Length: 335
Image 1 (tube, rainbow, N blue to C red):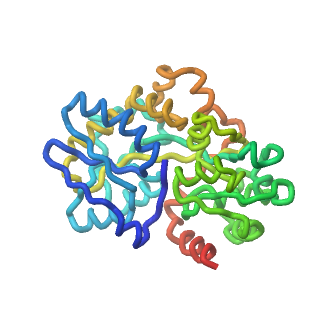
Image 2 (cartoon, helix red, strand yellow):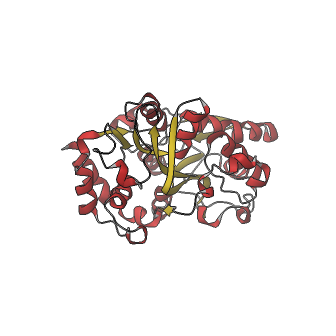
């Protein structure tokens, strides 16, 4: 899974992909997660329907809006962050989901709206490199404790749910008192380690920072730590106060291949499609029937197997406040 925000550079590098009558375009964040989505969803979808699925990316919210505003939409299905999907629906940027095609009843109700269906469910967790770090961090407070755990720490660079919440938890805020976020307190806590932070902008970058030991401790998507472990990397994970969120799949307003898009969503959210993706990535499935098709050992390592101290990030809050928070976030990073 990779994430980004809209910048001029990102807009400039976005690759436009036009679709023919026999094609549709799926846009996601690139890297190993999109590779897994292509294998778990696109390949069987093409085999069943004969419709070719072209891959594009990375997801770019500014580009999506520009396509819809211009009436020239090249993307058919897009993987986006849940809070963006909420805001985009309110702005009229998304098609309604055809639940005559997509089985809404099989989707975890936390991850479905009239305009979006779940892609996968993940957690921000504490990751650490066992070769480069002495001891085992067990809390967000440990991540912010440079005396106890010396070295660089790594966090997600974009304005999005996760980092501010981790800072507040590290500063002693109770999980049930996180929202509305106390921004002054969160930024003050981040100030204490700002000089020691190496920011990561995407999943592949986060893997490299952790696996190499350049940043031996930090906040990571659980699936990226899973990927390092699958490759033999000596990294550990703490699920304590793991911060949960989800990506969702949307169809931009005016998509040229809307019928194909709805059929693709049906495949992507099916029990088998979700089970295959979860097994490949370590992210939890959003179809309530998927786990029955999975190895119990894999199921035991998914985010929803670690709910004892789990904290659900408030997507509705972020959808309402994301732009305002972003202004302060990027101003603070630049100082």
